[in-house]
Length: 591
Image 1 (tube, rainbow, N blue to C red):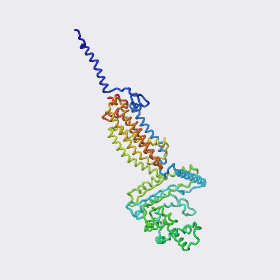
Image 2 (cartoon, rainbow, N blue to C red):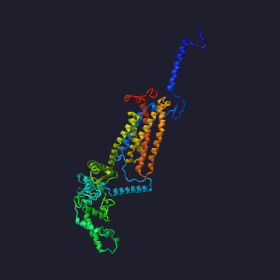
Image 3 (cartoon, one colour):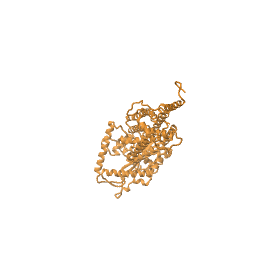
Image 4 (cartoon, rainbow, N blue to C red):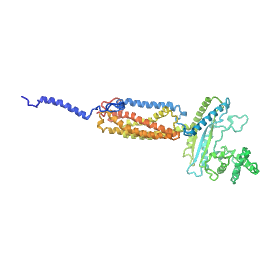
């Protein structure tokens, strides 16, 4: 049967239908999953599709890069432990705070030059004078223990206003003075007169420098003290005594006195000076608390006006203390530690430094084992109701500072736990929360390594430890920005053709924003360089380095973690801990 023009047979129709159907499926596939086209000119940073080459590498080798960055952080932290912590003095990596000056100021340079020259000359002179000589046991000052006392706000009478307050201060000194082992470390009193056959072991420890030596004098003549006070109360007597005391009490500068000194004035000065000298000679802190302790305070308020005797009292009273206001809100005292621990023959400079370092370690260990806990108890606010106590000692200052920093770091754990849980809530992934916490935490040791080893900045202030709180906040904020951009990318169908395109979009969107905020924050901390205080400068530089390292880790380690999360965990109801670390084909984006 002949076909009409334009018609087709059923067989031909089937052939045409089979040929058309696949074409329609392919078109639908291309519409739902468009293929990338060559729309960009390749460059050093981008490929022919406009994707960042570094992101392409991260997407293709996520586990390799992830492992490399983690290992690098751990290795740098290990090197920090070897280079910085083990080489630190007394195991303390922080610089012990001292007087701070502007290092570029001309006066600072002149002061440092004079101080260094004096130390060098004194050391050379000491070595020359003592060459071959024996230094007696515990005859030189090796260290000091410094107590500071403050009256509680409720104690209007001051630190010497009540028996309770005075005894509370004495407790701080009794920690050492009542310990029989303290004698092996104290500074001996070589001004003490001994017999011809006496040895160093027969000497007594030097009395502490404290006004408590008055209140605990071995003997107290109340009548003599009252007579001295009455004489000093007479108007004009203090001025008269100060004028004549250098000559008639100290036998100094007599040629500067006027020739017509009244004999009665001279006799008055010598008699009063002898009485005061007799009273002060028993100030040794070996007796019980003077019954009439208010008389002791009154005597001190007048002696502080006497030029030749004010040195006995003015160290332990505040600047507002006077005869008109016999109340001191503060007091202080010093306990002296001596060296060498045995009679020592003068050797070379290196030998003497080695000996001093060895004795310093022995002294520090003894203090930590026998005194430090008691000192901490004494300095607690709740120990005494009338005073607060504070202590300072060079031998243990590094350990005390390190202990304080450690306690602060322990408190920082709560901050990190909160940050960790908040990241977990935002990312909805335990894996990303752990990685985020890792990069925040390890930004500190990595920055410390760069600060100390690469930049060669030797001054590391204790203030730098506060950077951990700064990076905890900024690091978490960077993670939130990155994850928000990643979540937004799923609504842009034009970038969901593959994971490389999607992550390049996320990288561009977040990288610039975080770079700007990180740069401005770093610049703000670097502004501390204008201050002359070294510790503030150190903190500013270190905080800026920490923020920069945190930014780098977010854009590398956390970005890689997001790729692993996308491939392995995002659509996995379980933790996915047993998933292999390889390339997933197709990825969740391409499914």
